[in-house]
Image (cartoon, rainbow, N blue to C red):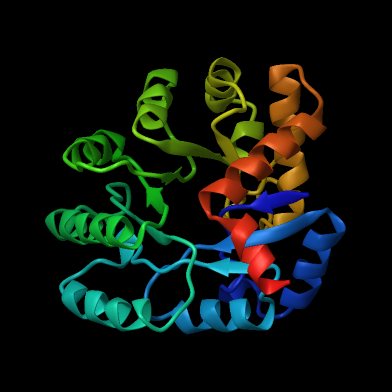
Length: 261
């Protein structure tokens, strides 16, 4: 069984064929999908999908850094209301994004640190977005004084960065980028190994080869696993078993499944 640890399958890109995409994932043996939150505009769609597919979809709550603007306090308030109402499996997607817009950089830091505190208080893993901001992310994480756990989503760094993330308690989210011809991620994976990896799609974005440029789907997770196995010279089954176990442990899905059965 595979787990997709990062899919926005609740997004409008799937409105016309969402059920078929879900069935495609199951056919590909992708049995569980983590749903990272974006903001208040998409949150209900995410939660509704999780409610209709409780044995497949596992929601988190968070505020994406690109959703931070002058109304960030309202976003925080809306999220706070949900925290006591919903069963969730993590905090995020959150972090810092300096690629699209740096206007609200200070506000991004405020909201990110607030979410780190929520994750600590609730003893939940955190899913971190770090586009063009890995240095800033590490600086903030170093200020935290607790045993963190989570995923550096779409991991963008070097081997040194990877070791640093692992030392802080994080797993590396590896997706379609590792299959790209000019990606440096293959070398990072080769040096780090599979022990600290989880698989993700970030669907509908960043589809792996041979689907690059198309809408990404959870059913493509085996393509990512196969590429990682090729890089490491191991059987794909080993990648499947280790990454699935990593995700199950991080999001406490062993307990979740037992409670639901």
